[in-house]
Image 1 (cartoon, rainbow, N blue to C red):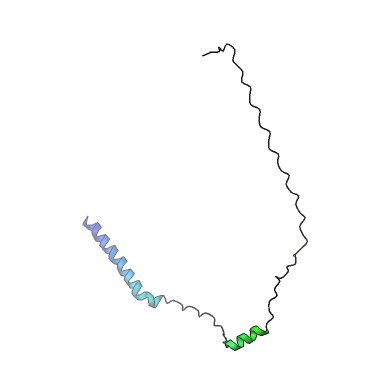
Image 2 (image 1 turned 135 degrees about the vertical axis):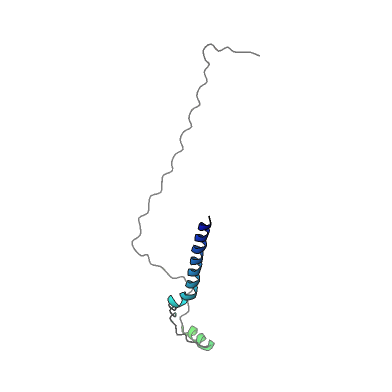
Length: 106
């Protein structure tokens, strides 16, 4: 039993030593590539007076909504579905007396 314990301690020691070396030396061996910088955009600032002037020069929107032209020929109208008539109720079966039945009068 002592031999199995020694083997487990040795295996655990080797595993832990490997993990510690990986953490310590990993930064030198496996360097990460730096992330790419995002592309920059040029932005221009305008004053409130310039913005108001630009809005005044633009065409005012009309009161009526814009008309939309159909893209293609109109589809033919589908005929309305005919209403399905309700089925007629089934007639109730006639009650007949079995032969040999006796009426009881109370």
